[in-house]
Image 1: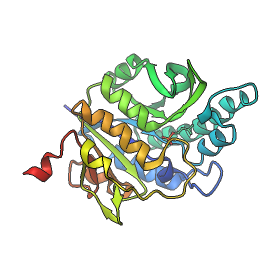
Image 2 (image 1 turned 135 degrees about the vertical axis):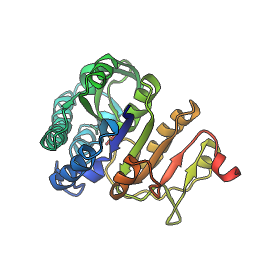
Image 3 (image 1 turned 90 degrees about the horizontal axis):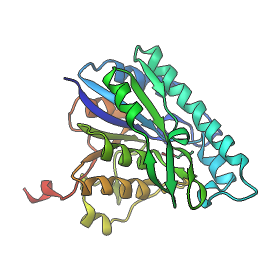
Length: 257
Ligand code: IP8
């Protein structure tokens, strides 16, 4: 049976972050080909927003919640990231992958920026029927703040806590988690505390690499491991080979051996 994999495509790898909703069609098509070439895995795809959503979310300060001045930001931000989602779905379909886009705004509720509900039934049924669900970081309605931004990383953490998957991988624009320019091969909750992470000066409203690690550590606590690697190593990850990146684990067993 095919391995069920959650594959996150970082917003910075599928958009040009220096532009405004500048979709990297070439990169997306290449990734779609990589995915379609592998018959022994079945992916649930989650992607970030990059330049299709982060600038809009920031402009309308949706990361700070909803007030009487920024309601239009919900449509504008959602519309931007939906455009990117369409591009990813279309590329997958053009490569022969039966894929469909799903939008968290329609299906989830948050409280103080954290997901408290997300209807996973449709995802499970899509997978069961051989259809690849393609989700994305999104604006979501929030019981306390009115609205918030839910990152693709938070979605992964929620999904993997609800649906049993074999492996989780995050393709990024860096080779892994870097400290002093070197890739850290394994991170657990203890080693993460002392980590001095090099952040790129991007426009993310969802916390960059630190936010990513925090999400993945909540999964690691449940015993679910995840992998962060450079997008050029996606094929290695999909094939189960060493990807040269970082593994986020509950306990750094690898160092102890
Ligand atoms: O790029 C953010 O998702 P991320 C979603 O995975 C929006 O952090 C709409 C900014």
